[in-house]
Image 1: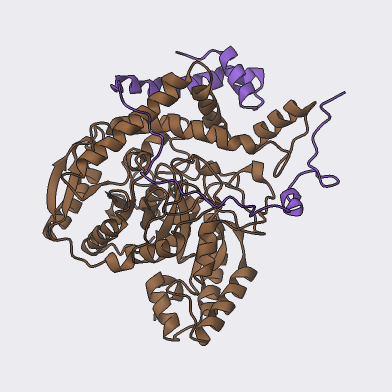
Image 2: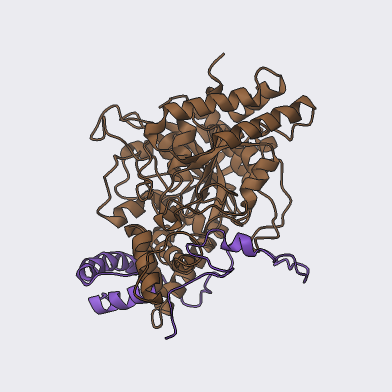
Length: 95
Length: 490
């Protein structure tokens, strides 16, 4: 199932990556090249095989249900590009 | 006495204990060597002041008879994927410009608790996506080895990747050891390309807390060092249960270095038929046969085994890893940390930040991942790949009925020149053809330098053990190391 430029545009939008129109066609070629190579997986019989969900057999350990974190506003904001008054900021989203 | 920077971690620890030199002298020797090796572009951030303070603290502990163990006073390089408090941590990406974490990763904290000294952060492929260290925002790291003949003679070679800075630093004697991370081969392949030992433990042995995420079900930290013993000493400090990582494993920690007995009599070594692939260079096949002979001579029983789904591990990996990456990398939005490129509105800000901040390979993988997880394609790609992954894990499970450890080559070639394989992503992906299956199954594996190519470049042999089989892995690797007696230097 080869990707066309409209599909690539949609994927880029879903991935929140800006792609100029002129780059869509070469990008579609690149992605199709990789997806074409991946399609050899169709040769593998996976009928009745469960998808892997845990890499190593392990018993999940639960932590005690207690507050052990918080009050880190200064640390959380320390690397923000444009913090203001204890908040992250973004461009205006509501007119 | 040879230069302090030539000592292995074990030798340096011995010298420190005997008072032959101080941790500060050892650290100064490394800092001076780093200054002379800038051309390799191995370090992305050097931390000499912190290194000296940590070395002085180590000397003070030792003077009081309170040294923390074999790593106390040992200078290490840290892959830039590990968050280090107050020190630039970028994952080799433009999108993490200026990011100085306010916390320390568990693995690095464990090393500092063991007394190790941080020399700085080392270069890597962007977000650990690459096999040549050419996708870093900070430029390529150069392999300290040079080809003596052939097409690559005289050219700058790649150190492998993604832990290319780690491997180059250890090989060039500008770090005694280094941390790396391995998702599909990112410790073992650069270890092989640089002529050092690279070890990936069982998934979950080392905490992933504070390690910038690439593919969460595959990422695992491990050591790069000059000897098998040094790798065991480093892993001892790095690994352990961590309540902050829900996939960290709560298992007893063996004494890894004590496993190096040199005795593998009766050990069953599996040789998988499917790793004999068309197009593998004769010198790789010959080295593999040499490895088989070495282990047989040491008393191991060689067993032919089959891992039927080997060839499907790499394509399945290129669904699973990008899928997980597309989710993990969704957090880079230009709002909370790192680069921000202002757009017309919020969505445009996200899109322009991510277009400017991620390099071409990272963008390619995010898009593949987004596509295979998107509505209508999830079953055909992602679930299919996870089913194939179960098949691959079952192959290994079946193999352990007839063998205790598996021997293969680490890579299908020696290091290549910077600029090669750049136009064809799949040719680059094939670097990891021998290392990816163990990653998909979460198994521990190690690359040991075992010989030189016809052009004078190092080649590695690769061992895979069952989950939690690190002791068998180190014991067998130690025997290979002794037999190979690899003493070539860049």
